[in-house]
Image (cartoon, rainbow, N blue to C red; front, side, top):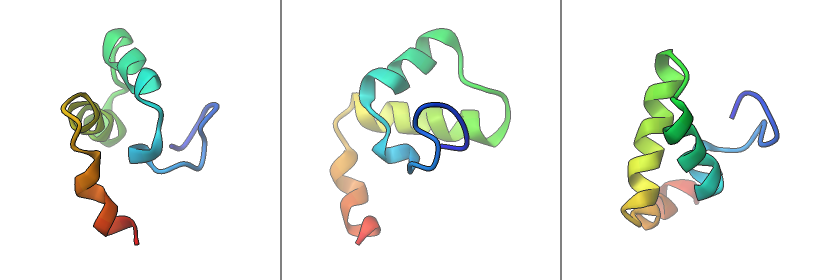
Length: 56
């Protein structure tokens, strides 16, 4: 995450309530917004486990 309370964290590591807040308020424009929308879908559907092998 490039800004805010969670600056420096991987997007997949953001807390779900924070990502849901972005979904309700509107994702930022550009690539970051697209990536946050994808992370939202991953988290809402419980697919975080798919990223575990990539993080090792």
